[in-house]
Length: 209
Image 1: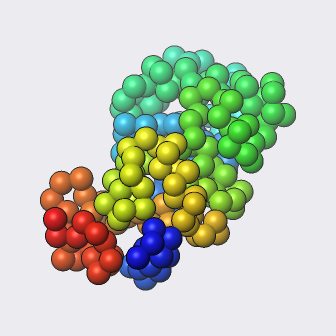
Image 2 (image 1 turned 90 degrees about the horizontal axis):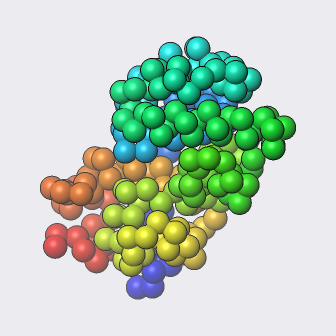
């Protein structure tokens, strides 16, 4: 079985197991997703969703963030961890969006990664979920499971992204990554994974090992 054949089988298996492929971060517009994703670094989505309502109530618009202070953002996101770095990035990101992008969140990975604190993982999530473009969000679940499936052979996020782009149908790639997150939380965890319950056990080369 080729990597592409196994990839297509995994697409269909995950579709059946997790038909509702959505981002678990709660947001109302592209800016809010961008900020929530920055907050999610080394922090659970559940925690971010507890923090963002007060943050977005205090700063409902890009201009509000630009006019605010890093210190006030720090206070509101303190429980997310790494709050000083994240607050600085969020404020600088908003200023750059206003000054260099006419206040509009870019629709390409190349432009998004020019923003402070935005890497390829965040950029892929935004272009996939907001703009409906092919995207591969190479987070920890994606890297772990794609390696176990034999679709990738690296822990480097960029290499994993490139290898998955080679074997996944472009129109499926964004939802596929959301489903990997759900599968990674419920079945194929970093430790104690449940191969007997896995929807991909019949073709996964590491099942039961």
